[in-house]
Image (cartoon, rainbow, N blue to C red):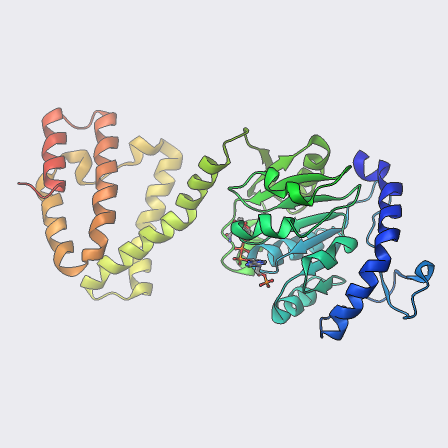
Amino acid sequence: MKAWDEMEAAARRARAERMAEHEAALDELEAGGIDLNPAPGGTHRHGDLEHASDHAHPHARSGPGERPVVGIVGAGPVGLTLGVALSRAGWPVGAVASRDAGRRERFRERVPGARAFADATALVDEAELILLAVPDDAIAPIAGTLRLYAGQAIAHTSGLLGADVLAPALAAGTQAGAFHPLVAFADLERALAALPGATIAIEGDDDLAAHLADMAEAIGGSPVRLAPGSKPAYHAAAVLSAGGVVALLDTIREVARALGLEEAGALRIFVPLVEQAVANALALGVESALTGPATRGDAGTVRAHLSALASSAPDALPVYRALLERDIAIATRRGALSPDATERLRTALAGGS
Ligand SMILES: NC(=O)c1ccc[n+]([C@@H]2O[C@H](COP(=O)([O-])OP(=O)(O)OC[C@H]3O[C@@H](n4cnc5c(N)ncnc54)[C@H](OP(=O)(O)O)[C@@H]3O)[C@@H](O)[C@H]2O)c1
């Protein structure tokens, strides 16, 4: 909290100077049909700027000891879910920036009191903690268009990138961080339900990290700080855990088509087996959870699978081969296979007899 409190006065001065410029930008956005409709109550006039219009907006700053006002750039799956979760947890979500009118409207419907902007630069005056929930490749370009004021902080939600990518937005007395929920944001309600208990990787100076950790806990998450330089590996593991499993399910679905099963039927029959394997791995460890032909040295079975897939689901062959290769390595490590059995399996997998 210290940084926000101590820098409040400097931030107020900076905002006052900036207000004159920003007022024109707000009018331009309104003229362009951007929804700037403020929530009623808690407003103040830009009276000290002698502005001709009666335009008013909510106070963006928190008081000493209060939670910082959050502004979210990007109303996609992550931005919307975090906006709703934070708002429900009592965190002030003051604004959203999204280029899409439909997404802006949806965000405002779900996050009462949030102001909506088309442009991230307009949001800076409305928030103390700015969250960039945009694709990884867009983070640096957007940060390059922003200029924070003393006492403000910015964080992104990427699992891959470090906070340093936000450096272009920083000025004296500002901080940058990262806030990555280890959640698959495929659907709003399901993601909201998944947040409690989810790991949330935090990055940032101690002061900001403490705020981000509070924020993570407020939405039910478990904040963690990763070792410096470890994010790419962390993110690769996350991608295997979510997209990797979905790719495997897609492969299973494709192979099961040869049985006459559509997706729903294939998932209903085979997902319980997936769940057993996961539960076994959690209870017994990965090595002990392995079952199947690799643990028995059944080279003939592997050959039969390859032959069946070649005719009915050829696109599944590379996945099958890669995973069986891994299974053979696990079984060998576990001591389940003799060197000869390992060799026979590898030969079969390579298409030999
Ligand atoms: N999806 C997940 O499961 C997940 C999980 C954890 C973390 N993350 C991270 O969270 C971030 C956002 O993920 P997401 O899945 O919500 O992303 P997304 O759906 O691809 O994009 C989110 C929003 O970013 C805006 N956007 C897209 N391209 C842009 C560009 N070139 N310039 C400016 N804005 C742009 C869009 O807003 P407009 O409405 O303005 O077009 C969109 O609504 C990423 O860093 C991702 O790695 C994702």
